[in-house]
Length: 252
Length: 212
View (cartoon, rainbow over the protein chains, first blue to last red):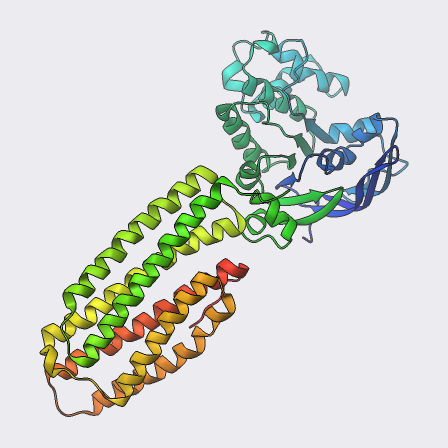
């Protein structure tokens, strides 16, 4: 991988005395979907939250190492964390729309970042909802409460909300685990589309989902990056026996 | 830990091994009959049909396992390879039948004694390859499977020597035509044993190689 969007170097993360990420080195390609897999508690979520420095919201966390996005160290002193979190958006496990209208959910970020006036805001909302593959379904009811949407629509709204602040990178932490199969299919299709414009990193417990949607897959175990490579190779012929055991269900 | 997939894989393995054993039996009867001039075509036809039936069953089982369990890694390699191997065994059986068919149509069975040294060697080597391919399958032994490459080279040499010998002959008769077809079928069986070998290497190590 010679061309990377994100370059993680010697990353270590502790929560108190617990060492949860252990010397991870990883280069992540732009315009690709990278899946992060591994057993519960292996550090998948902590790894992706290190990219936009969300771990820092936990007071007992401590991070060493470097993460470069476009050659800029996100742990450098000059970094504006507020701006970093605009550049690196995040979608969580359960759809978490704000208790506001559909329109306001999407407009919230651009307003916060003072990215647009009212007229420009309309265009951003439309563009973001189109990007989230939701526009056609909600264009006539933008003022409706976001909670009136179905689960899959709510998650696409959250993706549209992340897109509204024009990020480069989208982190997704098990984005389909609370959705039914139809809504999951919608989100998976959307993730594949998003990779054309964004660098997407998805944490998932669902092996088949990782195989379906990702170009590259990383496998983590007790805080270490055990194997990382093309998804096709990892699912056809994993190099590490632990990965073989995990993905074939022989683990434990 | 026993997985739900494991019992399905065990069943699939048993079916493929059975298909291999039936194919080996068909090849053995065919070769012996060809050399001894016996007419056993109906026995071999019945065995060949049995292999075809098993191939369909293997495909059905493989699809069932894919649909139910979405296998990956070594499980997926096994299922994919077993489907290919089942087809190769079907070809063993079909060529075994073709040999006797050529003998029946072109030469009177009891007059078609083929004890030439080259034909003897060819038959012996091809039968050895069939046996090795089935043993390697049972043991998932990639190293044993790789030994097929050398024997296949020897078979090719014998095949072309035999063709040269036939080409040099001025005489033309039905037995010669029969033998021409038979050496071709033998060479094809040998090729299919190497396909089985390649599939076994893939099962055991994930390595994609060519044994020809």
